[in-house]
Amino acid sequence: MLDDTLKAQLQTYLGMLRQPIRLIASLDSSERAAEMRELLQEIAALSDKVSLDETGDDARKPSFVIAKEGETHGVRFAAIPLGHEFTSLVLALLWTGGHPPKVEQEVLDQIKALDSDLNFEVYMSLSCHNCPDVVQATTLMTVFNPRIKTTVIDGALFQDEVNERNIMAVPATFLNGEMFASGRMLVEEILAKVDTGVVAREAEKLNAKEAFDVLVVGGGPAGASAAIYAARKGIRTGIVAERFGGQVNDTLAIENFISVKETEGPKLVAALEEHVKTYDVDIMPLQRAVGLAEPSKTDSKHAGLIEVKLESGAILRSKSVILATGARWRNLNVPGEEAYKNKGVAYCPHCDGPLFKGKHVAVIGGGNSGVEAAIDLAGVVGHVTLLQFDTELKADAVLQRKLRSLENVTILTSAQTTEITGDGTRVNGLTYTDRVSGESKHIALEGVFIQIGLVPNSDWLKGTLDLSKYGEIEINHHNATSLPGVFAAGDVTTIPYKQIIIAMGEGSNAALGAFDYLIRQ
Picture 1 (cartoon, rainbow, N blue to C red):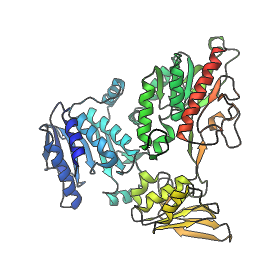
Picture 2: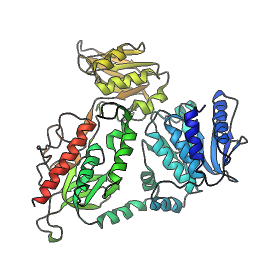
Picture 3: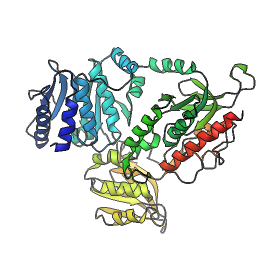
Picture 4: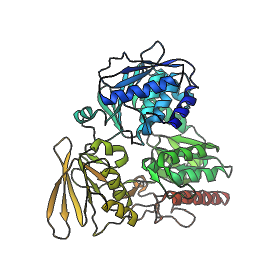
């Protein structure tokens, strides 16, 4: 089950256990249960602090609980947690065995203080790069609070359960039997939803902060780069972001980041965050900016300070601001899209593809992202139909050649999607217009993956500074906006090419522009 390299790594990790743990397995006679038994036996053989108990009788079979010796409470894996979830397995073993987690003590105290019974069920797929964040967050909560339960469920392993609950996208998190959240969440985000008082407490702390010299809004490549360059100047720097890493979190393969032959989005995000934390930067995560105001001419206390208002009601002030809020997936804006989001309409083929195993799906978009999505899905689903609005695909030639070599892919060009249809519960097809003949046609489908580009996250800035007709922030060669003291960088701006490495350079340029502005005031 585990190769020699993984065994060696796992044995090293298990050497960090401070107290004995048990793997309590609930197994049946299935092939997957045999695979799970083999994995658990291999884990137990690597440490004398790990024992295997096969007397579990949970209704979900196969599954296993990781518990402290003498206890039965712990995180349950209704899965064989390899692939992207191997790290989640390792952390669950370590935390249960007494190895301290790398989280702020304030977060642990908040988890321990929760005084209600919480039963999380997290549906994931082993190929999903966003799922581990939710799995690890709920695992942490379970290990440190006996009133919290977590079951991690592989959607591909429990397909009937997925169908019964109409789960069409992962990660999908249920709390006490009801839908709680869909998509990536960090432990702080989950705590904010189950501990309602945390938002007010956090807003009070943010309001009390002193003014910054440079405040960066956004935690993607541009924002991280801007924060590092500003902090290196020795000035008071803060970075406020809804989620660190931004859109890069949803990117799997990255092969054009110069000097790094190949990496994945979540790995790059982790490296960015680690780099930022090596400097004296005040990082304020999980905060959404909703307003920007130029310096007041009547408030003497805050004269010369730009204000950034947050969704929580808090206000941050700074002598200069760098906007790096990035972009988000573009919607089709056709009937049925919103109604069937996470019910067959998806945007991440890597995450949600396994839920459509053997089914007929469509990919809308003929650029690199659309063609890459179709190639990935073709290895999992029964059939892929790719629809391109233009007369030809726009993806790189090498990707087009690969796509056309696949037998279970149909390519439709000059096809304008006009509606996504469903039965009220889930997607059952889409309607498109043949732009050559004008004829309207319908395709029976079980999933639609939308890959048609990005929209800048600038809605909250309308009427505050100059935006292009596409909603991008207009900047000059110093990355300055039309508002004095406010700079911008990355995918939210008018730079023509939206690339990670370009965003990083733009973030650096914006920080240097902001510093030049400050020393001239």
